[in-house]
Image (cartoon, rainbow, N blue to C red):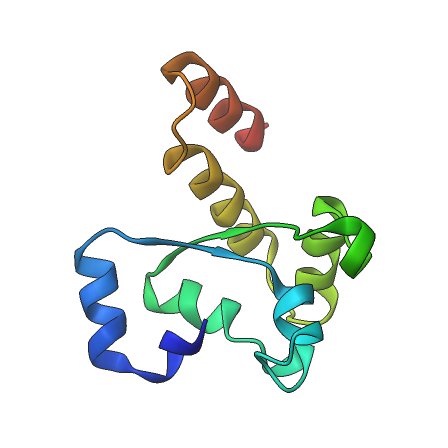
Length: 110
């Protein structure tokens, strides 16, 4: 997530089709970002960086995947569309079988 401050690097990552797997709660708890409200996930999404929302170790950090999405909605003020795009990316950039990817993407659109 620290790449968010480097426009040239971000463009290289976008051009290379790199997807960021982001764990906002652990980024905050590990002091990668000073506060949740300053987390750059929304900024990265708006710049066109492919991102997914993920959970880290729930026992250590206390957040599961649902809580991470809720945190992104409440603390990062991400819209339904931004959250849905991150969910779509989790399928598009996965190594899952094609039928699983297609089914997952269809479920997001419901």
